[in-house]
Length: 179
View 1 (cartoon, rainbow, N blue to C red):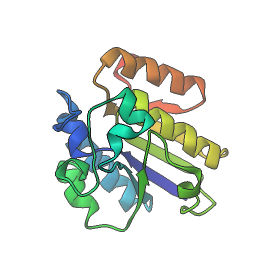
View 2: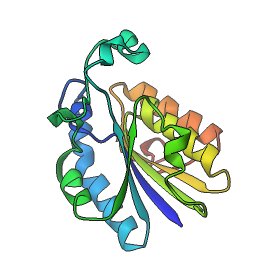
View 3: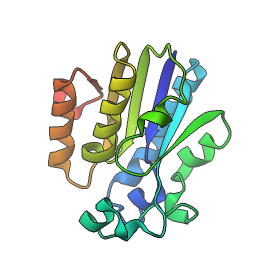
View 4: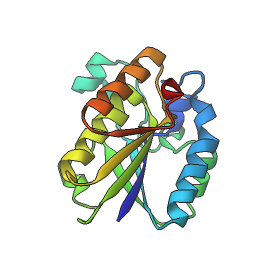
């Protein structure tokens, strides 16, 4: 079984409280890649960074004192055309309280995963963390990250993270650095 994972492509990370220039440009590419994977039989998985009104009192909130992706707000919603399309297809929602998915949430997905494709935001935080989480859950699955469908507020950290992902045997595809 193949998974196509859209990591935290939420309004607050695109054009909201933690948004950054260029994040909105990923929408069409993520949509096309997700549609292609779905047509080929992949299971769509969407992670949502999910906080509540108590965010500023959490460890993360103390380190990053900027409320974001509060469940029930427009900032929590999946962005753009990708968000609209996801509503129309069966998919698994994983609400995360921090960068990576909790082990018990990964158990919601059955065994037998052989291939995983990932994209989304933010490369050096949630994409990296979730690649590690899914690698631990499915150690025999080939994980690929779409370099051109991920982004960070810091382009140097984006590229360094892709290098780290290569180092832990994640396949990096569509990387402009390789061209």
